[in-house]
Image (tube, rainbow, N blue to C red; front, side, top):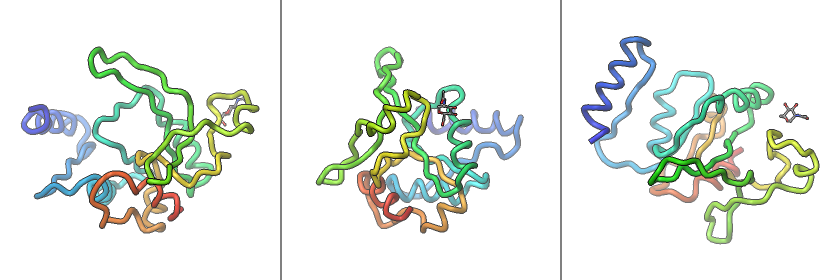
Length: 170
Ligand SMILES: *[C@@H]1O[C@H](CO)[C@@H](O)[C@H](O)[C@H]1NC(C)=O
């Protein structure tokens, strides 16, 4: 209900104020997570692209620290920390800060940050010292760097492998 006519109206309204600000990419058939992420990337023109699941909401000030890390080094692929929005009352439940890894079935898992990170006593410091090659599949990347590493494998049909594949490519 919210996605068809109402979405179109909302996009038109925003684009009236800021021409070309929102682009909606539609597929003629269901393509799944990975091909959808890549087709969104193809439509993007900004120097940095954020690829997220549709059910993610963003909080105020989320972008600045992420853009800073990428400005320092364009080969960084960043995953911000996630909290939970409760579906029944929209309350925010804070999740512990964590790195991301995977188990033997390649399922994404949250990992406690390494001791070296805890020693910094700085909860805003990036958890980059964790020797994990995996990220949750929601990330921010330099648009051209993402192409240099070959994007994501568009042969993947469903969720679950991209978090590991991306790490290997990087
Ligand atoms: C904490 O980490 C952030 C991000 O690296 C840095 O900007 C900030 O200066 C650090 N704060 C302290 C008190 O070291």
